[in-house]
Each structure stands twice: as structure tokens, then as C-alpha cells.
Length: 322
Image (cartoon, rainbow, N blue to C red; front, side, top):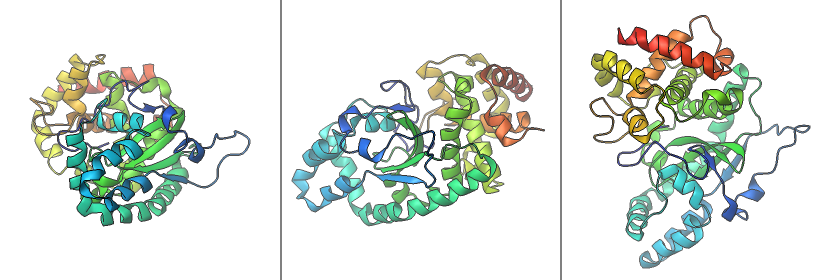
């Protein structure tokens, strides 16, 4: 949902798409932990898959042996997941070394994140189910390091939806581990099933997907602050004066799925989004959804078909640009 500086929050076409991860080379690590779900026997309890055990073992090794150990025992088995989260097909030894150096003082905090996350996931899932009774109860949470690129992300792993929590990012910025974050990513997981034709790589699909997830998480968590929901204290303040220009630019790129257009509105980090504030699409998307949501229930919004969403968004952007 939220990207660290210099880490792309726009993950493009990794194996299938930005939300899909195929861990064929990690069957022994992940496949056993992700049992196939039977339609006749839905899984009643939340499932949390912890992929941090091998990562934590790295820090018991001598410093000069850690990078190679990480590459062979952590990165290689889970390479598709890392590629998807960080937006790069490969990482250098230098990048691994820098990540491990940054991680070492946070190991204790990361262990705390791993310990606390299942309870928060269960609590947020319970809240979510009160509104979305058709939510897939077999949805999983995956705990993994993310090279400090994501705090939370919704992904489809081996054909099954999952909420991936970046334990390194959360350990470094624990204020981001809010119920709003959990509910935001749970909504993405739900939306994947509820209205797949409204989800994709075009600007309008990204605008709807992120704006609706932000709006839904605020409603479910009773969060009144948009800045808090965006985990960004400056975005709303910086985007408001140029709101009309952002809306007009979004209309121009509306059906574009190119990385250039989508990065302009949905990527974080210094310089991203120019001439607009980074991640301005999250802000405008939420404003647009607020208008479209008038008179509609959250479950109805989640099930809106792509053609209806596209028409409503285009009309709303025209209003916001006026």
C-alpha cells in the first residue's frame, strides 16, 4: 500500500501481474503452508504464514557470511515474492548487504511484529467480516521481509489471495501497523474476488482500487483523518491546492496502463509524481470514491462492475477538475 523512498510501489507484470506471485521454486517453504481450500469445507480461522524464520537465522552468522546465506536460503526460494514486492528482477550483493545492515538493529522489533501480527490480523478480519460476510475466510496473511519497500501489500500467491506484511518496514515505522492498514489490505484481497473486472493496470482501475480500499478502511476503522488513512502527513495538504490539475491529468491518462502514467500517480519517494505530490492518485481516488459512494453500501461498492466504475469515475473526475 505505501512505499518507502526509492522503492517502487508500482509492481508491474511479475510473472502474471503486479498482484500475482507464483512460488514454484519455493514449494517446500510455502506450498505446504498454503493448503488448497475446499469449497465444501471453508477454513474458519485466519491463517498466518511466517516466512521470517530463515531470515532471522542469518543474523546468528558471521557478518561476512550473511549476504550469501541470505541469497541462498531466503532470497532464492522466495525470489518471485521479493521480485513482486520490490519491483526488481534481481538484487545485487551490495543491496543485500545494505538491507541486512539496516535490518540488524531491528531484529528484536521485527520479532515483536511477527508475534503481534496474528492477533491484529484476526481482529481486523473479524471487523471486516461484520460488513463483508462473503469475504473469503481462507485468505492468508504472509509475514516476510520486504527490503523495506512495503508495510502491507495484497498479493495472489500460488493462486490464493494473501495479505503480505513487510515486517522490516513495520519494525522501522511501527506507527504504520494500524487497523486501517490491515483493513485496507483485506479489502484488496476481497476486491480481487468481488469485482475482478474492476481491477487492473490502467490508471482508472488503479484509481478505483486504491481509492476504494482507502475509503473502505476508513469507514470500517471509524478513521476520520484521510492523512492517517494514507499514512502520509503531507499528501493531503500538498495535493489539495493542485487537486483540479491532478484530476485533469488523471482524465488524460485515464485508460493508460503504461508505467510512466501509473508511476506518476501511485508511486512514493522523493521526486515521484512530479509535478504532483507522490501518490496523488491515492488522494484523488479517495475523493472520487467518496462522491461515488453517496447512497451506496460498502458491499455494493465492492461489487461494482468495471464498466459502471469507469463511467462513474470519469464523471467524478470531470467534477473534481472543474
